[in-house]
Image (cartoon, rainbow, N blue to C red):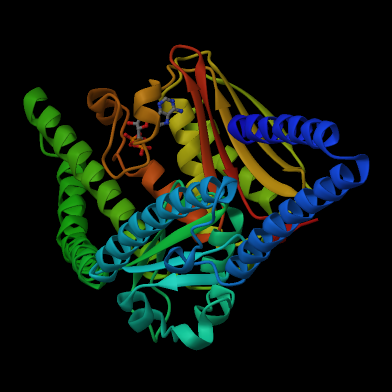
Length: 430
Ligand code: ADP
């Protein structure tokens, strides 16, 4: 721009000198005439190149960019340089895009890109096959019109993609694992993974555990019966015999509790899509737990209750009772004598919440994430000594999941723990 400015200034100075010379040599009329002539030529010159530029802008391509003359040559060569650079960048972008498309296209997982309104922007061949996407019809349509599933819709709309979503309740579809990642501004890549094989293996494992537990239950019951008979027999027994029988009885009962827990877990899992909608009187359920559990196992602890007795719940009574039971039993087992345990059942912001708070030993932060896994214990010895099976929290988590709720755990080592079961608002009966 600087150069153009200096050229224009130079041109005006030359024009002024020429005008003064003409004025000195000839008369004023001739001077004005030559000035008008010069200015007209300049205007015509620039108008011509402006017209050429306008023509080129209608169909901009590097091939037919005019050369220009004078200052226009400079302008056009600048345009040429910018255009060539842009073309190169575009070319590079297309190459990267092609690479991405062919990479994503070759993936065994289905990949769909959606915009902020969840409309499909692009999909790879696997996704088109999996979800029946027809690009020319379905692009720019919301993905929920093509893949209709209420869990999927809620998951995408919730915008919390930390955990993956598993869907295996659609008859026309294989079981899918869904992951989401953001790109650009609010656009998302949704990856659909077929988990048929994994699900089959998992089902086989569950089936095995369930069958095994059923099979072992009968001989174990017989064994426990014999041990009880043996213990009751009047024949004189030595102290060590009595001790052995009592140990046998203790271990057999432990095994029985473990089998019961395993059976309960597989029962909850095999009834995944059952409608859990019994009307449960929670205040009464807690009164029962108080009588059967707290008054038996929690004599040396202090309890306080905050129970909304008008608040009931839609759910599976036996499962809910087992979940509440497990949390209260854990609070007793992991809180030293004289410790304080609070039991709360209230509606908080329309959500029915059951909470057990203790001031017991607490859980190290690094273990909290894993304690609801089967057989995961922070301190296996303490768990066994207090009669734990390592399955309590796995049962609680499964129950709450089957009721579309969530479990939240807060704990400080040495200060205590809080376990909250948060149920969806539409399960509350008020
Ligand atoms: P367990 O039968 O071993 O208690 P759970 O599944 O009920 O099995 O609990 C898993 C682990 O979580 C326990 O072994 C214990 O380490 C920890 N835990 C559970 N509840 C509490 C609690 N209230 N306070 C401290 N630790 C707890």
